[in-house]
Amino acid sequence: MTTSYTSGWTPPPWEPPVAGTETEHLLGAITRMRATFRWKTGHLDAAGLSATLGPSTLTLGGLLLHLAMVEDYMFTTKLRGEELVEPWRSLGHDGTDEWEFTSAAGFAPEELYRLYDEAIERADIRIADALDEGGLDFVCHVDDGNGNHASLRRLLFDHLEEYGRHTGHADLLRESVDGVTGEDPPDDWTR
Image 1: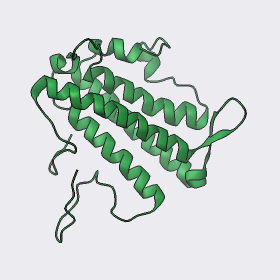
Image 2 (image 1 turned 45 degrees about the vertical axis):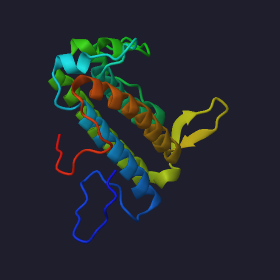
Image 3 (image 1 turned 30 degrees about the vertical axis):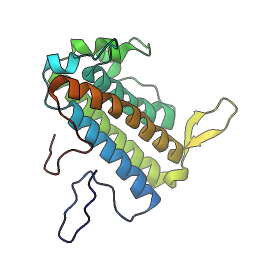
C-alpha cells in the first residue's frame, strides 16, 4: 500500500482520494481493487492463466472471466433487473455458477483480458448513471425476497467484498506462477 503522502507525490490513477466524499472513497476503493486484481492477472500467457495451486482448480483465467461476469451481473441484473445477455450468450454461458471457472481455459489470454476490461467499462457507465439518478441511495432491482430492495451503496460494498476475496486468490496464484508479490501495482504500472 502506498503510504507516502509527501509533497510532490503524484498518486497513481487507481489510488483512492486521501480526503473525499463517501462516493469518492467507495469508488476509489473499487478502482484500486480492480487495478490490483488486473495487475495480479496481467501479462501472462495461457499456461500462466491456467496454473492451479495445490488441490484447487481455481485459475487466474477463471478469476478474470468470473469477475468480468460479476461486473455485468452486478450492474445489469442486480442493479436494473435486466437479463444478462451479451457478450455472455455468444460466449456459450450455460447458466451454471461454475461456467466461467471451468471454461476460461478455452479462451485466449487476449480475449480474457478484453472481456474483463470491457466489462469494467460497461459497469462504470451503469454505476455513473445510477449515481446520477439517485446517488448511493439509488434503489436497485435486487431484493431480499421480502420486497426490501438494496441500495447502490450496498451493491458497491458487495462488489468491493467480491474483489477482496478474489484478489486474495489472485495473490497466491500469481506468486506460484512467477513469484510476483505486492499489495498495489507499481506506480508506473499500466494495463
